[in-house]
Each structure stands twice: as C-alpha cells, then as structure tokens.
Length: 79
Image 1 (spheres, one colour):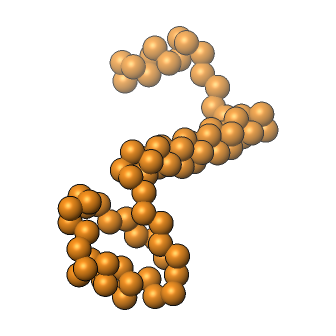
Image 2 (image 1 turned 180 degrees about the vertical axis):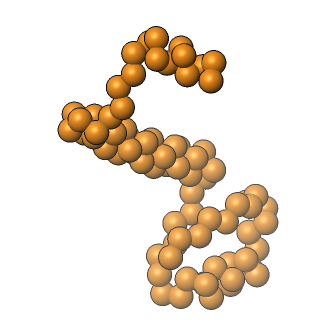
C-alpha cells in the first residue's frame, strides 16, 4: 500500500499518529521531509521517462519508426 500524507510537522498530533497506526497496522511507515520526497519522485519520473525513451529507440532500430524529410515536415505545417 502506498499513501502520501502532506502536512506540516505541527499537525502531527496523537490523533494523526493513531490514524496512521490504524491505517498501516503492523507495517513499516517511512516519514520523509518534503525535499527528500520530491527528489525521490523526480528520480522515479526520470526512470520512467528513460525507460520510455529506451523503448522508442529500440523501436526505431527495429525499423518501426516513421521517416519524413524536412520538406515533408514543412509541408505538413501548412495542412
């Protein structure tokens, strides 16, 4: 299970902690500063983009791309 709670440290009170305990019974919980979370999210998105880019490159190498000349691309601009 994945959940992200965005709150200020001052909002962590006994009620919030009990809610976390009830939600994630007997599981580990990781609490990160927002900066660390954002850095991890950026890396995760970069990894997904890299994977998509590698797939596209493989498809091109396999001849699955569409080839257009500059003249054809310019002509398409005016369609």
